[in-house]
Image (cartoon, rainbow, N blue to C red):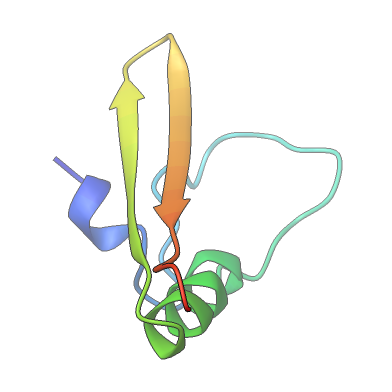
Length: 62
């Protein structure tokens, strides 16, 4: 349900998950901006308890 929100600045899906370091929640928002500036297609495929695969495609420039 939250997949569409992960590209939003400061959004964190799992606020209870304990990590070695705490993130600010802006990483994917920055990635999104860079990819859009380069006219790239991007997305994520995610399955609960299996993990996520992030992908991107850049257009070929001749």
